[in-house]
Image 1 (cartoon, chains in turn red, yellow):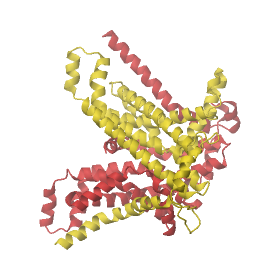
Image 2: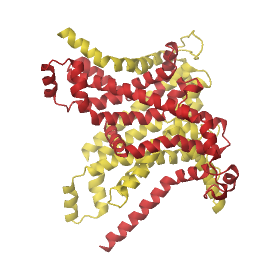
Image 3: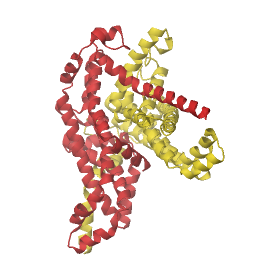
Length: 274
Length: 288
């Protein structure tokens, strides 16, 4: 019994220590983002004290053109996810309900594509998109639809298999066409997997850097990661500004996480099984 | 009827299949073609050069250097990420108070983009480590990221910090799937915690390890954002990974054909390693 108790205490200490180690980087970033440049040069580890300032935030908020880049990121992410949900769920349902070699082949193609790294297709892709005049936000949304397709179709495919056909047959007898059957009867039943698909896609699209770097060539279209990259290039010696910028850039994700923690963890678990 | 069914099929499957084809399938096929040309990204005239690019790749010392750096990084970081992730999973499933908070804390880094994380750690290594090193007189903590080995370990630490929480989530679900009856039986038989870990937890969580190793493996090989923002490949090109080497070959040196050949070699290596790993792990799972 005594041994059990010391074990518990030991575990507790390990728990606290690992939390401190995991959160220490955030502490250092936040604390130093609140210091004047002088305060930062004098002491990196301590609290701001008399060197406290909020100016870094004001300045980097303006320099990052944050409202603009956040709007761009939000627009691209939301639009891409909406298209992915609409078209991946429709395709997956049709592939599950149509038992032909063709649908097997298409599904197999999506699964194999998960192995193709982005780097293998990026150069020809940029060329094609350039020719189609799609090196812009509209084009990037289309590309996210294409890149999000394999995982999203697979997740919907797995889930749709468990939806009973009987309800759909009843709807068909009532005179619904396939479109109505899907949107009125089937899609509402897919809600749990829709949440998962949205979260998994949101996580990478919001944070994606390489594709926007290749595709977006106008400052007014820059997303948060892209803007951050140029911002650091410009102010590489000004950590006081840079750190405040990093905190601003992280804030939307942290708020999103705190609001959606349960769904996010569940989504990650389901996504990893595939 | 037959015709109607076909129409519905393409109406439902068509749009996303079209996007997938344009964005992934066609570029992949075109990429194979481009790898046999002297394409420079600008000139519209593209010359066929046969296997020139592939021959060049094998003579490209920078590419091999990037390849070995990436492979070394993959091996080390797969180990650290999965080990730390598994230990964290054990910790938060041990019935500790506040384990929900811990779970949340460990997972947060994983949600933040690689580019931002790289900048954060650039700050930690160059300023934070340096300050602690100066204060405590530990020479080891100074000058991080200025040499190949500190750049390497910097990347390993960054990726472990970022991805361990993700792996933890996967291992938690594995641990929670262990039937209570087995654990109760073990307790009645008087098994120690170490025996339970070795003879029950580890074998039963093995499928989750397959997933974890696969995810960290492909992630390590494809790494780009963190590489760019943490070290930028420096000092020199000492910490340049494969992805960055491909990018620089194309956009730094305007050798798109060569870059495409490298990208396809990269694809083959990645696919071969990933499939072998899945095959070996699955075989092992059955044996266990």
